[in-house]
Image 1 (cartoon, one colour):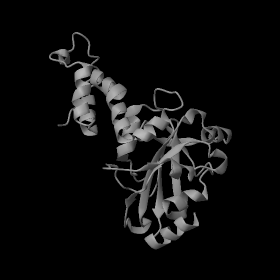
Image 2 (cartoon, rainbow, N blue to C red):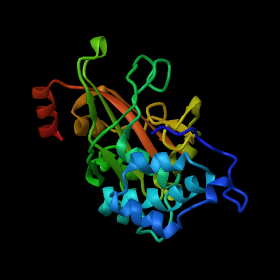
Image 3 (cartoon, one colour):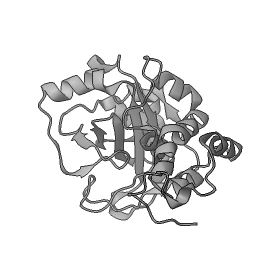
Length: 248
């Protein structure tokens, strides 16, 4: 079922959708039994502003905790009770490959965004995307979402990730120190925040291509103000990528 997004409803006493309305506890139990189904959470969010707020505040948080419990525990272990960019943005990052539109972040590539059934995020892999002086930062990065046989572009991989406590990270401090510029038009597909180009900032280590199994000069990624990361690479043929892993 597709619902049109409602922005004006504040779920006041005069609101029509209060008639027969279930309590937060009942809605929580319903979605608990639905195993925090993300499609149904998104559908509920479209009903009205009150439902949207409840989904962002409660349901998406439970979805994230269920989908990646160890990762969520670590992201919150600094004492914060919220996640940068909100839980809905993080929930989307866990299950959505943003792809690329022609003329967008990755100029010559056009691959529509899509949902992914399952993705592994790794803190160990994340270290490979950080310069040596920034490796005390914590970054979780997904395995590349492979899109094979893309004509002249070859085999393409999209990856995404998230920093822990990005506001106090060494990566953010270095970007500010370098006076790195934001992308003039594009924003984060997960939280709509502005994006830094890590390639332009010269902050992509060689270890990133080794970890991805890609050509060294064909890795590019962005980090937004909330610490979400998205990038792409051109993947090596399987035999070559195995050799790159051995070198790493």
